[in-house]
Length: 274
Image (cartoon, rainbow, N blue to C red; front, side, top):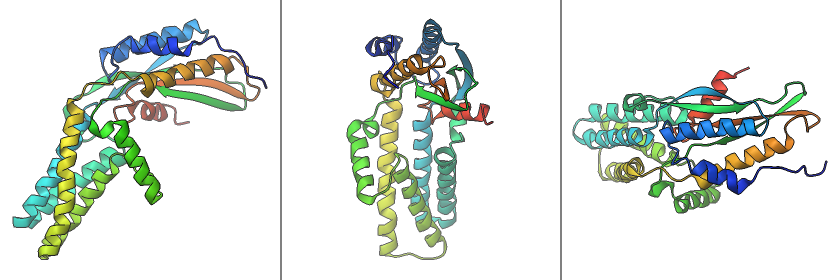
């Protein structure tokens, strides 16, 4: 099959989306972006609808509190081992629920906002389906989220032959602190244990500063993350939708709240489990 033409101007689509403002999850600018995308899809001859998404966008502050709790547990374990171990266990457990299971715990106490997924369903008479997905919201800035930090983490992941997420080192440090606290609770002490506990504790202290930096940073313009992805999804939907593919129906999913711990995509999957 030859390359089908597209009437979508990618640069114009990117400019139109970024002009609505900095699209933080649950913000007025994000809602304006959703309305713009609904209208744009209809202009392209596609049906469009929205699905509500609940977001808890203050994840940097939530993680900063949890990490500070782990640091407090590490310090307390020296004089009160039971209390220190309990604090470290609580921090590790809540961090696992927040980052591993992706369910809001502490974030629920820091404010809830409303967001939307913009969905455009194609025909549903083909044996296969193709969902083009991109998020239209934009994330925060911060040193830990810079391109340089991403490149260094990717390089280290390549070195150890394992993908490393941005929150994995934080969780590993919390687990290391928890193990040290449990050892102190069991009656162990000494210089070696102190050194082993000191290293992850320092990592967590640095993590608190980096998380607060993210929490205080402004929302990015989001040209590359992810107005460009939205523009490409619109172009592909216009090019291959409308029954142009022989065996696949083409659907389009533009998620909101994605930069609030993947709230948009999780809400879509929960709503369309079958």
